[in-house]
Length: 154
Image (cartoon, rainbow, N blue to C red; front, side):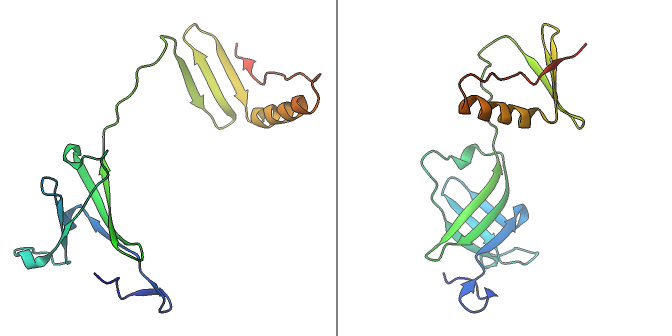
């Protein structure tokens, strides 16, 4: 295929991306083919679609994908690439410990931490700047000590 004829910056830089929403393509994961719509609302015939064959990385299996949301055809200068945007469920690893902490990011304070044992800490907005300043001071002179920016609540 040739790149699209529409130009962004003069005659040398072609448009490089064509985006298809979910209704604008059909994905066949068994034969690794995708049919792209030519823009008609009624797609009764094979000629209403542009057939494409795709290859994925070895670690990608599109047959397990539940919902393909979007497809982008991207011209790289040498060939077309298909970028498939989809929802994939990611497994959550087990926590290495039984202990938990709740983190609340705030507006007036950077964060509030609440531990399961009832202890809590409040980090004010300037605590990161203070930590950075203390770290630079400590690395400049070995005798400097850092202070903890947290303040216990209650």
